[in-house]
Length: 446
Image (cartoon, rainbow, N blue to C red; front, side, top):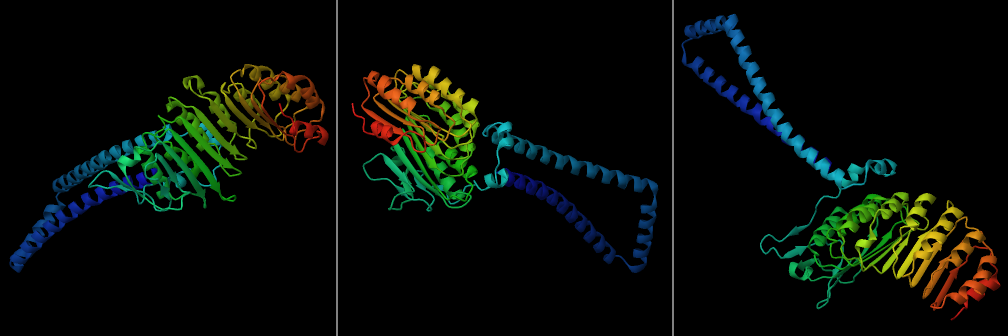
């Protein structure tokens, strides 16, 4: 967008310069024609006399000085005119850059990102194409034909991208009635088509009563979707004020920080009554920048929040940031936390087990996934000992160096105290827990 704008400004300056020069050239041609006409109208001897007089005049120092001064004055006026044009265009460009900078994460983050394509070139592709609102009726939208839009008559739900019935014409009055939208988007190349992003942005701007939003991504494994995901998130969350339920699912895809950061830094602060948040970015390229953004969210602003599920297992996270984010998880009825990589040590598990878990007195359904970590038996014991009295419990310790001891103690000592527990599941794949004990945990019933 910036490159297009800059190109446009340059063209405007060149156009103004060209018009001034053409005006001068026309004036010169007019004078030349007048002189030619005058010469042709004079007798031959008189022409020679006039030309000789003209040469003498032009050689006069006073005349030469006047011409030079006149030309200098013209140059000054030309420079002033072009300067005014450039000042105006530079101001426009500065304002554009300010808008651009205010809607992106901070400079330190941008430096840490490894974007495979230049940011400017990618953003350039988010221009509006094939999208327009009917100029006569003002109540009809014609959206990108490259996605499927399905709104079943009589319902308040809209499905995008995953329906068998194709329709891309909607009445504005029908769009404003929609309260639930589900997106199923497929990344086929390095970028989602710009017309799709523009169509979704136009649509979102008019989905003013949406309360439930679901986004399911299917991506080609070999493509880089950093900027495309950012474009999608910023487009479909254009009007988040009335959202109550958010669900995002993307697994094993090349998604970085830009999209999630926009979600946590720009979308969350605008939501007034969030009730359910379910986000899976499993095995993506999200970093600790996302966790830092989460720790800044004031969940107390959403008093009716009952479900918070965040799975970042397999992402490139730092232990200290994981500790801080686990300490900030909201105390809600349905809680899922998925983290896991080899950087996690007893420091993270002890902080979570002794500080955070005991404070989760409202949790009824708890899911925690600590996968492929350096978790020890001692860490597991602390975690299991501090479990709240929940109704449903799922814990994953996949591919961690743990054995039978903490689970045997759990079965004998902690489990009998969980009076509310109705459902229990453990994922012990890739651990040293014996099959016999794993079977006992599998078949447990209240």
